[in-house]
Length: 94
Image 1: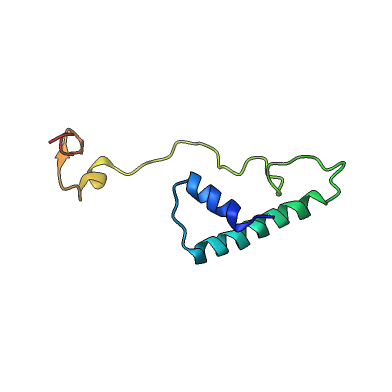
Image 2 (image 1 turned 180 degrees about the vertical axis):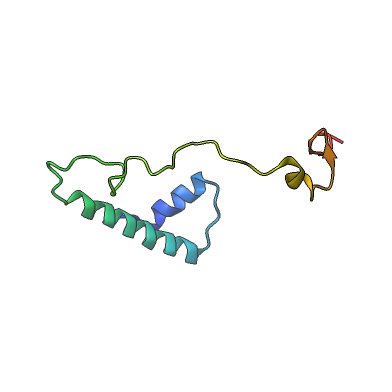
């Protein structure tokens, strides 16, 4: 399991300054994570196919069909600055 010295070593590598309380908390939390991983390694997974998602979805996207969009005048009616039929923006670097 993770020791406070392990946490201190990794914190020093990451240039983190942890208080004693934070170091104790990180030691507990990292030990819990590793304990959970060890528990997962105990599972019998022979014959289980690898999967990327738990729900079998093929395509949940709608068809890409053209449809009327917002008229240009309506889109620009609240624009603070209109330029050449689009939104006017300040030049970069100005």
